Amino acid sequence: MAKNKKDTQKYVPVMGEEELALLTKLSNALAVSGEEQEVRAIVKDEVTPFADSVETDTLGNLLVTRHGTAENRLRVMIAAHMDEVGFMLVDDEGNGIFEFRVVGGVDERQLAGKSIMVGRDHVPGVIGAKAIHLTTPDERKQTLRADQLRVDLGPGGSGKAKVGDRGTFATHLQVIGPSLRGKALDDRLGVFNLIQLVKHAPANVDLLAAFTVQEEVGLRGARVAAYSFNPQIGIAMDSTPAHDLPHFDGESNERYNTRLDGGPAIYLMDGATIGDRRLVNWLVETAQAEGIPWQFRQPNMGGTDAGAIHKTRAGVPSVSVSVPQRYLHSAAGLVRIDDCVNTLRLMWHALARLDASILLRQEN
Image (cartoon, rainbow, N blue to C red; front, top):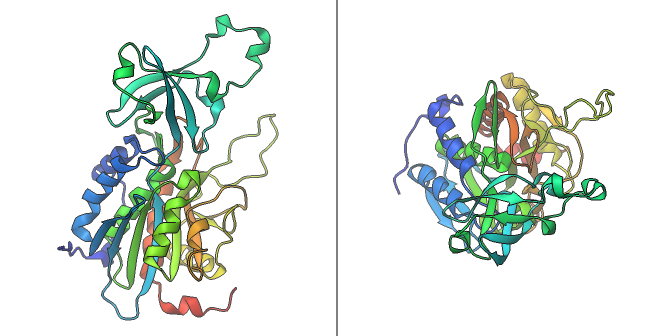
């Protein structure tokens, strides 16, 4: 297929009207784990004119290759997951009322009363619970579980959705001053940034872009994609919790995970991966050389697609880079636009200065 021949050596990431429109389309799409086709279609349209190959594998990953032109190029796999947390309808109780179960790490405390959309037609509805006026004092002290709630699509809703359909929050992306508020920014921010890297890939690497499925339920797509690509280096681009709010009891918050306005978060270790020290240092050196703000993502729970990539075949040196975000896996996350742009800046400049000598470093 024909490749767009943009001068990638002069690329300066921005969040202009065109870029914001794409991110809005990605964020507003419905792509709960196992049902990623809506985001996949958007990504495919965006990257096809720039890629040497675009394939959808049997699990649903979109595997995109853009070859560089320099000699002795490294094969670098960058993964960003297309799926989001949400729920699945499991029983039609009639009159538009459905029982459901969560998909991925949804905070069930935040479900009641949320506006939602269900299925490929984005059928509108609400997650219903007993009104507070009808509850007992003991009931008000309890956290409602998903099996105590219902999806309400209104009269006729049973004809618009069916058991097995996925659903998620009906939150539209919005600019709020220096911030973006929206759903599924974990990991549509990574998907957006990876699209930009495909469009503006440096010539000194073979970019293997994996837009993965089912990350939120066990890093499943990344394992398959990494086996197929067989890369020399693996990178996961994701979003990670910003634990930067004042402590709930009024004391100062001394134990942070990441902070908004701190720039991209480079992982040392999480619940699934210990970042390859050579790659961590490469990213830090790049940020310092280019004057890009950055921070370490403090060791904590959770994991990214790197957790599956680094264990593939004979092993792949891997690291993760994330955009800090408040309120992950809820109806609305909050990020800084500058953190998103600086993450893309870091990744592009890091790729542009990469060569095979990084794998010869004696830092592990």
